[in-house]
Amino acid sequence: MDNLVQTKPMPRLFPLSGKAIDRRCTPVNGGARFSLRLPAASISTASAALGVELAVPVNRASAANGRTALRLGPDEWLLLLSEAEAVPVAAVLEARLTDGRYSLADISHRQTGVVLEGTAVTDILNGGCPLDFDLAAFPVGMATRTIFCKAEAVLWRQSEGRFHLEVWRSFAPYVWNLLAIVSREYAV
Amino acid sequence: MKLLPPRSPIKGSQEMLLIPCPYCGNRPEIEFAYGGEAHVVRAAAPRTVDDTAWTEFLYFRKNPRGDHAERWRHAYGCGRFFNVKRNTYTDQIEASYRIGETLP
Ligand SMILES: [Zn+2]
Image (cartoon, each protein chain N blue to C red):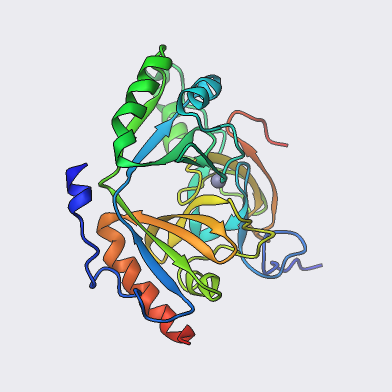
Protein backbone atom coordinates (compact mmCIF):
# COMPACT_ATOMS: atom_id res chain seq x y z
CA MET A 1 0.00 0.00 0.00
CA ASP A 2 2.96 2.32 0.58
CA ASN A 3 3.49 3.04 -3.09
CA LEU A 4 -0.08 4.16 -3.42
CA VAL A 5 0.26 6.65 -0.59
CA GLN A 6 3.33 8.14 -2.21
CA THR A 7 1.72 8.47 -5.62
CA LYS A 8 1.40 12.20 -6.18
CA PRO A 9 -1.08 13.67 -8.65
CA MET A 10 1.39 14.83 -11.26
CA PRO A 11 0.13 17.81 -13.28
CA ARG A 12 0.99 16.01 -16.50
CA LEU A 13 -1.32 13.14 -15.55
CA PHE A 14 -4.19 15.36 -14.52
CA PRO A 15 -4.38 18.04 -17.18
CA LEU A 16 -8.03 18.74 -16.39
CA SER A 17 -7.35 19.98 -12.88
CA GLY A 18 -8.59 23.47 -12.29
CA LYS A 19 -9.15 24.21 -15.97
CA ALA A 20 -12.68 25.51 -15.59
CA ILE A 21 -15.19 26.28 -12.90
CA ASP A 22 -17.88 24.14 -14.46
CA ARG A 23 -15.94 20.91 -14.77
CA ARG A 24 -13.84 19.71 -11.93
CA CYS A 25 -11.45 16.82 -12.05
CA THR A 26 -10.18 15.35 -8.82
CA PRO A 27 -7.70 12.48 -8.78
CA VAL A 28 -8.64 9.65 -6.45
CA ASN A 29 -5.48 9.10 -4.48
CA GLY A 30 -4.84 6.20 -2.18
CA GLY A 31 -7.39 3.59 -1.28
CA ALA A 32 -7.39 -0.12 -1.86
CA ARG A 33 -9.03 -1.92 -4.76
CA PHE A 34 -9.91 -5.58 -4.98
CA SER A 35 -11.36 -7.68 -7.75
CA LEU A 36 -13.73 -10.17 -6.11
CA ARG A 37 -15.11 -13.16 -7.98
CA LEU A 38 -17.79 -15.25 -6.28
CA PRO A 39 -20.16 -18.08 -7.15
CA ALA A 40 -23.85 -17.25 -6.62
CA ALA A 41 -24.03 -19.54 -3.57
CA SER A 42 -21.46 -17.44 -1.68
CA ILE A 43 -22.91 -13.97 -2.30
CA SER A 44 -24.91 -13.75 0.93
CA THR A 45 -22.01 -15.01 3.08
CA ALA A 46 -19.60 -12.57 1.46
CA SER A 47 -22.09 -9.72 1.84
CA ALA A 48 -22.36 -10.40 5.56
CA ALA A 49 -18.59 -10.66 5.92
CA LEU A 50 -17.99 -7.37 4.11
CA GLY A 51 -20.94 -5.49 5.57
CA VAL A 52 -21.85 -4.46 2.02
CA GLU A 53 -24.79 -5.92 0.09
CA LEU A 54 -23.32 -7.67 -2.94
CA ALA A 55 -26.65 -9.00 -4.20
CA VAL A 56 -27.46 -5.83 -6.11
CA PRO A 57 -28.29 -5.90 -9.83
CA VAL A 58 -25.40 -6.19 -12.27
CA ASN A 59 -23.91 -2.76 -13.06
CA ARG A 60 -24.94 -1.23 -9.74
CA ALA A 61 -22.89 0.20 -6.90
CA SER A 62 -23.46 -0.75 -3.31
CA ALA A 63 -21.90 1.10 -0.40
CA ALA A 64 -22.01 0.74 3.37
CA ASN A 65 -19.65 1.25 6.29
CA GLY A 66 -17.23 3.21 4.12
CA ARG A 67 -16.84 0.29 1.72
CA THR A 68 -18.01 0.25 -1.86
CA ALA A 69 -18.71 -2.70 -4.14
CA LEU A 70 -19.33 -2.14 -7.84
CA ARG A 71 -21.03 -5.15 -9.37
CA LEU A 72 -19.38 -5.35 -12.80
CA GLY A 73 -20.82 -8.72 -13.78
CA PRO A 74 -22.90 -11.61 -12.46
CA ASP A 75 -19.92 -12.99 -10.52
CA GLU A 76 -17.54 -10.01 -10.39
CA TRP A 77 -17.26 -7.07 -8.01
CA LEU A 78 -14.78 -4.20 -7.80
CA LEU A 79 -14.26 -3.36 -4.12
CA LEU A 80 -13.14 0.16 -3.24
CA LEU A 81 -11.83 0.38 0.32
CA SER A 82 -9.65 2.54 2.46
CA GLU A 83 -6.05 1.36 2.61
CA ALA A 84 -6.35 0.47 6.28
CA GLU A 85 -9.15 -1.99 5.47
CA ALA A 86 -7.37 -3.96 2.79
CA VAL A 87 -5.78 -6.51 5.08
CA PRO A 88 -8.76 -6.98 7.46
CA VAL A 89 -11.20 -7.40 4.55
CA ALA A 90 -9.03 -10.05 2.91
CA ALA A 91 -8.77 -11.83 6.25
CA VAL A 92 -12.50 -11.77 7.01
CA LEU A 93 -13.38 -13.11 3.55
CA GLU A 94 -10.88 -15.92 3.96
CA ALA A 95 -12.30 -16.75 7.38
CA ARG A 96 -15.95 -16.71 6.30
CA LEU A 97 -15.76 -18.26 2.82
CA THR A 98 -14.58 -21.55 4.20
CA ASP A 99 -15.08 -23.55 1.00
CA GLY A 100 -12.42 -21.39 -0.65
CA ARG A 101 -14.45 -21.03 -3.84
CA TYR A 102 -13.74 -17.36 -4.48
CA SER A 103 -11.02 -15.16 -5.87
CA LEU A 104 -9.81 -11.93 -4.31
CA ALA A 105 -7.10 -10.10 -6.25
CA ASP A 106 -5.49 -6.93 -4.93
CA ILE A 107 -5.52 -4.53 -7.87
CA SER A 108 -4.86 -1.37 -5.82
CA HIS A 109 -1.78 -0.55 -7.85
CA ARG A 110 -3.20 -1.61 -11.19
CA GLN A 111 -5.79 1.11 -11.38
CA THR A 112 -6.11 4.77 -10.74
CA GLY A 113 -9.16 6.94 -10.69
CA VAL A 114 -10.49 10.41 -11.14
CA VAL A 115 -13.75 12.06 -10.16
CA LEU A 116 -15.28 14.21 -12.89
CA GLU A 117 -17.92 16.79 -12.07
CA GLY A 118 -19.89 19.46 -13.87
CA THR A 119 -22.85 20.02 -16.12
CA ALA A 120 -20.90 19.07 -19.26
CA VAL A 121 -19.45 15.89 -17.76
CA THR A 122 -21.58 13.50 -19.81
CA ASP A 123 -20.76 15.36 -23.02
CA ILE A 124 -17.07 15.15 -22.21
CA LEU A 125 -17.31 11.44 -21.39
CA ASN A 126 -19.18 10.84 -24.63
CA GLY A 127 -16.11 12.18 -26.39
CA GLY A 128 -14.57 8.76 -25.81
CA CYS A 129 -17.30 6.51 -24.42
CA PRO A 130 -20.28 5.33 -26.48
CA LEU A 131 -22.68 4.77 -23.56
CA ASP A 132 -25.99 6.60 -23.25
CA PHE A 133 -25.68 8.85 -20.18
CA ASP A 134 -29.33 9.83 -20.07
CA LEU A 135 -30.49 9.31 -16.48
CA ALA A 136 -33.01 6.72 -17.67
CA ALA A 137 -30.25 4.64 -19.30
CA PHE A 138 -27.43 5.34 -16.85
CA PRO A 139 -29.03 6.25 -13.50
CA VAL A 140 -27.28 7.49 -10.41
CA GLY A 141 -25.73 4.47 -8.69
CA MET A 142 -24.96 2.66 -11.92
CA ALA A 143 -21.40 1.40 -12.30
CA THR A 144 -20.06 -0.53 -15.25
CA ARG A 145 -16.97 -1.51 -17.10
CA THR A 146 -16.87 0.15 -20.49
CA ILE A 147 -14.43 1.58 -23.00
CA PHE A 148 -12.98 5.08 -23.28
CA CYS A 149 -11.46 5.45 -26.75
CA LYS A 150 -9.14 2.43 -26.68
CA ALA A 151 -8.80 2.05 -22.93
CA GLU A 152 -10.83 -0.21 -20.67
CA ALA A 153 -12.52 1.87 -17.98
CA VAL A 154 -14.95 1.57 -15.09
CA LEU A 155 -17.52 4.33 -14.72
CA TRP A 156 -19.58 4.88 -11.58
CA ARG A 157 -22.24 7.60 -11.55
CA GLN A 158 -22.27 9.06 -8.05
CA SER A 159 -24.77 11.81 -8.82
CA GLU A 160 -26.30 13.32 -11.93
CA GLY A 161 -23.20 15.41 -12.68
CA ARG A 162 -20.53 13.40 -10.87
CA PHE A 163 -18.70 10.32 -12.17
CA HIS A 164 -15.90 8.21 -10.77
CA LEU A 165 -13.73 6.98 -13.64
CA GLU A 166 -11.23 4.16 -13.08
CA VAL A 167 -8.63 3.15 -15.61
CA TRP A 168 -5.56 0.96 -15.56
CA ARG A 169 -2.61 3.01 -14.36
CA SER A 170 -0.62 2.67 -17.58
CA PHE A 171 -3.61 3.97 -19.58
CA ALA A 172 -4.10 6.99 -17.32
CA PRO A 173 -1.98 9.53 -19.24
CA TYR A 174 -3.73 8.48 -22.45
CA VAL A 175 -7.21 8.84 -20.97
CA TRP A 176 -6.57 12.05 -19.03
CA ASN A 177 -5.06 13.74 -22.07
CA LEU A 178 -7.98 12.70 -24.25
CA LEU A 179 -10.37 14.05 -21.63
CA ALA A 180 -8.44 17.33 -21.67
CA ILE A 181 -8.64 17.52 -25.47
CA VAL A 182 -12.38 16.82 -25.49
CA SER A 183 -13.07 19.23 -22.68
CA ARG A 184 -11.54 22.13 -24.60
CA GLU A 185 -14.75 22.14 -26.63
CA TYR A 186 -16.74 22.71 -23.46
CA ALA A 187 -14.56 25.41 -21.96
CA VAL A 188 -16.59 27.91 -20.02
CA MET B 1 -39.22 -8.17 -52.43
CA LYS B 2 -35.64 -7.17 -51.81
CA LEU B 3 -34.84 -7.00 -48.12
CA LEU B 4 -32.73 -4.01 -47.20
CA PRO B 5 -30.49 -4.09 -44.14
CA PRO B 6 -31.78 -1.74 -41.44
CA ARG B 7 -29.50 0.87 -39.94
CA SER B 8 -29.64 -0.67 -36.49
CA PRO B 9 -30.09 -4.29 -35.41
CA ILE B 10 -32.51 -3.34 -32.64
CA LYS B 11 -36.03 -3.31 -34.00
CA GLY B 12 -37.46 0.18 -34.14
CA SER B 13 -34.16 1.87 -33.40
CA GLN B 14 -32.36 3.98 -35.95
CA GLU B 15 -29.63 5.34 -33.76
CA MET B 16 -26.71 3.08 -32.96
CA LEU B 17 -25.55 -0.47 -33.43
CA LEU B 18 -26.60 -1.97 -30.10
CA ILE B 19 -26.21 -5.54 -28.91
CA PRO B 20 -28.47 -6.83 -26.12
CA CYS B 21 -26.29 -8.39 -23.41
CA PRO B 22 -28.38 -10.81 -21.29
CA TYR B 23 -26.76 -9.32 -18.17
CA CYS B 24 -26.38 -5.62 -19.02
CA GLY B 25 -29.07 -4.87 -21.58
CA ASN B 26 -28.55 -2.97 -24.83
CA ARG B 27 -24.98 -1.78 -25.16
CA PRO B 28 -22.87 -0.28 -27.96
CA GLU B 29 -21.35 -2.83 -30.32
CA ILE B 30 -17.83 -1.50 -29.70
CA GLU B 31 -17.93 -2.99 -26.17
CA PHE B 32 -18.29 -6.53 -27.57
CA ALA B 33 -16.00 -9.14 -29.08
CA TYR B 34 -17.29 -11.63 -31.63
CA GLY B 35 -16.91 -15.28 -30.68
CA GLY B 36 -17.91 -17.19 -33.81
CA GLU B 37 -20.70 -19.68 -34.38
CA ALA B 38 -22.52 -20.86 -31.26
CA HIS B 39 -23.37 -24.41 -30.25
CA VAL B 40 -20.26 -25.95 -31.80
CA VAL B 41 -19.73 -28.82 -29.38
CA ARG B 42 -16.26 -30.15 -28.69
CA ALA B 43 -16.16 -33.92 -28.35
CA ALA B 44 -15.86 -35.05 -24.73
CA ALA B 45 -13.09 -37.48 -25.73
CA PRO B 46 -11.31 -35.96 -28.77
CA ARG B 47 -8.98 -38.95 -29.19
CA THR B 48 -11.93 -41.17 -30.01
CA VAL B 49 -13.09 -38.89 -32.84
CA ASP B 50 -12.01 -39.61 -36.41
CA ASP B 51 -10.21 -37.04 -38.55
CA THR B 52 -13.26 -36.10 -40.55
CA ALA B 53 -15.33 -35.29 -37.48
CA TRP B 54 -12.44 -33.43 -35.84
CA THR B 55 -11.82 -31.40 -39.00
CA GLU B 56 -15.51 -30.62 -39.10
CA PHE B 57 -15.37 -29.39 -35.50
CA LEU B 58 -12.22 -27.32 -35.98
CA TYR B 59 -12.72 -25.69 -39.36
CA PHE B 60 -16.21 -25.96 -40.78
CA ARG B 61 -18.86 -23.40 -39.96
CA LYS B 62 -22.32 -22.79 -41.40
CA ASN B 63 -21.69 -19.18 -42.48
CA PRO B 64 -25.34 -18.70 -43.44
CA ARG B 65 -26.96 -15.79 -45.21
CA GLY B 66 -29.79 -15.28 -42.77
CA ASP B 67 -30.43 -16.49 -39.24
CA HIS B 68 -27.27 -17.37 -37.36
CA ALA B 69 -26.64 -18.38 -33.74
CA GLU B 70 -23.35 -16.88 -32.66
CA ARG B 71 -21.29 -16.22 -29.56
CA TRP B 72 -20.44 -12.75 -28.37
CA ARG B 73 -18.47 -11.60 -25.36
CA HIS B 74 -19.24 -8.38 -23.53
CA ALA B 75 -15.51 -7.71 -23.31
CA TYR B 76 -15.74 -4.09 -22.14
CA GLY B 77 -18.67 -4.73 -19.84
CA CYS B 78 -19.63 -7.70 -17.72
CA GLY B 79 -17.05 -9.87 -19.46
CA ARG B 80 -19.54 -12.71 -20.04
CA PHE B 81 -19.86 -14.86 -23.14
CA PHE B 82 -23.43 -15.23 -24.38
CA ASN B 83 -25.28 -16.23 -27.54
CA VAL B 84 -27.08 -14.08 -30.05
CA LYS B 85 -29.50 -15.04 -32.82
CA ARG B 86 -28.71 -12.59 -35.61
CA ASN B 87 -29.69 -12.34 -39.24
CA THR B 88 -26.38 -12.02 -41.06
CA TYR B 89 -27.99 -10.24 -43.99
CA THR B 90 -30.17 -7.65 -42.25
CA ASP B 91 -27.98 -7.48 -39.12
CA GLN B 92 -31.24 -7.76 -37.15
CA ILE B 93 -30.78 -9.36 -33.72
CA GLU B 94 -33.75 -11.57 -32.86
CA ALA B 95 -32.67 -12.79 -29.44
CA SER B 96 -29.81 -13.02 -26.99
CA TYR B 97 -29.55 -15.76 -24.41
CA ARG B 98 -27.10 -17.06 -21.85
CA ILE B 99 -24.57 -19.81 -22.37
CA GLY B 100 -26.23 -23.11 -21.58
CA GLU B 101 -29.67 -21.96 -22.72
CA THR B 102 -31.12 -23.27 -25.94
CA LEU B 103 -31.73 -21.19 -29.05
CA PRO B 104 -35.12 -19.52 -28.61
ZN1 LIG C 1 -22.80 -7.48 -20.28
